[in-house]
Image (cartoon, rainbow, N blue to C red):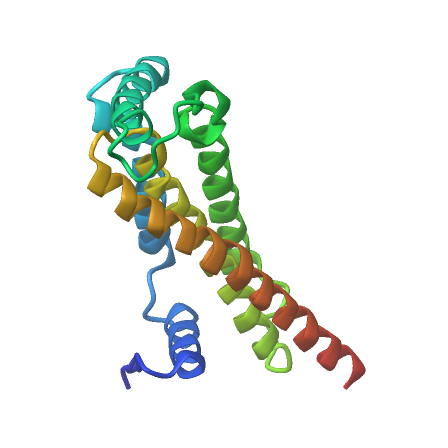
Length: 201
């Protein structure tokens, strides 16, 4: 019987996804290959966006783009963000490197964490089924959050359009705070509470 995935109930959605992943009809290697391709794609994204062959060259292109956008934003007297004292070199978050390196490492490490859970989860008994689900949800959300952070971070350091910068900056802030910080912390503590419940019980 196929598993239906409800979209309006998060606990039911989580349960359905876990049942799909742990079912005999699931293809874990194919799924992980797709994850790996997505992760490599976001790592190489600056090269695609700048049409360059090295991160050093991409960093220079991104610097020039951001510098041009910053001149309009911070040095135009008619701009609401006018601030002649603003210096791009004082704002490390506006540079492609090393921000993209850190984001890429976080994405790769969270991907490995999800792979370890999928193939070597210590909670493989019926008693620990809830533990397995909550731990898997944590690793899945962690990878998704880090992936989205790495992708949307280019809005701060590699676009010349003010509109694109604003949209990607908003998305990056939302994903960083909502998913990467708050969401993963909630799921981590939920797993620890469930583990304590199993141990006590």
